[in-house]
Image (cartoon, rainbow, N blue to C red):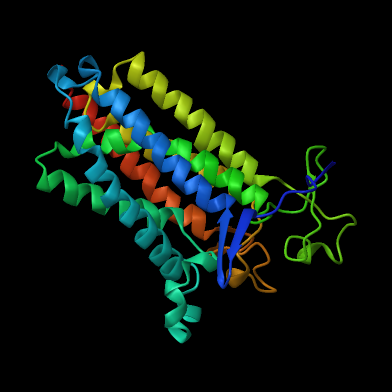
Length: 295
């Protein structure tokens, strides 16, 4: 078993000036660095015209600053509203003012994805950017942000996996993370599901997409890379959900694994329910893009 690292906390530092206090959190830093990393990757890719159909990038690197503004709004608004709608609709119906309390936590990847897709679509339409190639551009650097976000989840001591006795299980000590361990095992050992996701949907998916883009010229097939991202993330999330601690709001004595849809002893979690359509959409994108390959 591996003890949870000592000396780390959700906040990096705090600055107090009179009545003003500023705290920088790892999760916020992950968002900022992830967006900047995507920006840099997109800029490099757009400057390599030979990677794109007919040697013509879908937009100029100079327009990226405007696109980033759209994407930041999409991430924040979509991520927050997705969490509200998918995971705690009853709670926020009773406490609507708290929808704006983003600093208290509560973001949904699938909501953020929808927000980014909508923001990107609006930007691409306004700037005459080919939708499929634009989607490929959005997808290419996205796994970096996912990797950083999952590492931040680990540092924040949140979104833990289920209890386990595997040798690489992590001993957790926080009250929230060890809550379900009270009558099970001591010490409380959980799957480091955040690290599983960081590796699968972050590192491995990023390496695959870089390989396809720069070695296999996948960007010359508009929409194909976006399809790979959808399939890669969807399958990774569905797999890791088998090890993640169930969402408490869906748990009950008859549904201890927190399935959103349950049939007997089997079912699908909310994360799996939202990821399966991603796999289907991704496969459709890959198949239709191959048929319409542009040289």
